[in-house]
Image (cartoon, rainbow, N blue to C red; front, side, top):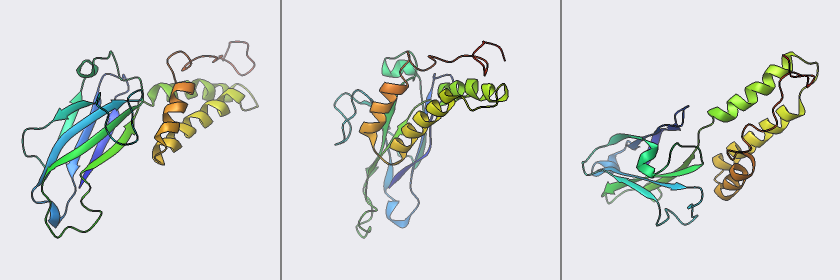
Length: 186
């Protein structure tokens, strides 16, 4: 019944944007966006939103709503983790709604990929300065693809594991050397 039209963290990590809409269809005349709930990766539960989730509920009847959240609304300084955003509806679908079309909550993970892409750009710059592909580039790209694949396939426990292991603040930019020959020059 509900879908994300857009879900992202801005490049600077200072806003989380969730554009949520009720799906089009004859069964959803009396269904509206109820709100969103956000869990951090430390609070994620496979059974649904945790008791520690942040709830941003709408008290108006809207078919589409764009949530623009600042980190302070979650008690953090910036959006630099993996988050799990649940969009949910309120109201009652038509009684003849087909089975499976009456799901009133969806979950989508979100994180800011920009720092990871910046990390990859340092390696890509090395490609032009050397005749061989830097091993660090392959490693960083495979780690990012592993995280993306875990998120896309719904393996959220693995996504959390990969995020914590490979993309924590400390390791995010560690070990990057400028220059293909490790001399520090480009």
